[in-house]
Length: 195
Image (cartoon, rainbow, N blue to C red; front, side):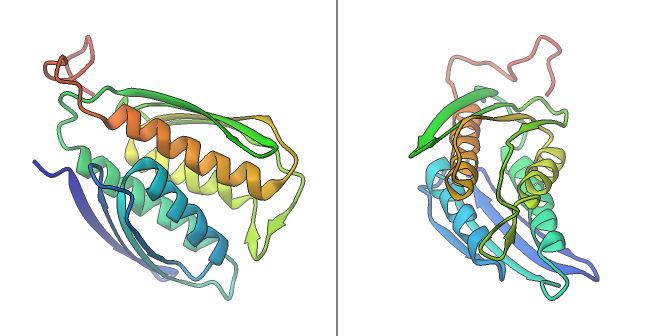
């Protein structure tokens, strides 16, 4: 059974279509109007082995906030829908990912409950045209609509590009692990019987 989903969301600020195949090979087609953000989504897809198509028409003449936050909302919804019943998933995943000077930890629980712990201090206010405050906004929105518990922590690093890229890749790797099917798991991995 294919674990994939597509979601469209249109507001006065953004018009977004996202699709994801959790059991993909890392193929990505992305166009958000923000170059660095496109780069991050490409890395997220490639290192999570998710096939992602993401198209965003956003009010980038205002700034990138609505585009990035709403993309997180829609991708999170698609991820949650693609998981389906969550039967057989490993549920937990983590990754400590190095990228040059940066070392970032990501841990995830596909729990059915939203939570974000975000400790990723960045000295640079922008990377190209990308406002670094939007990293937290993206992951908050994604965790909320994906119904996951997500922790992201910078262990080391000074270069903002490296730190943010390491975060996107680490989260992707942790999600790939958590969403993987374990044939030893009957139903969902919870003493409650539901996720």
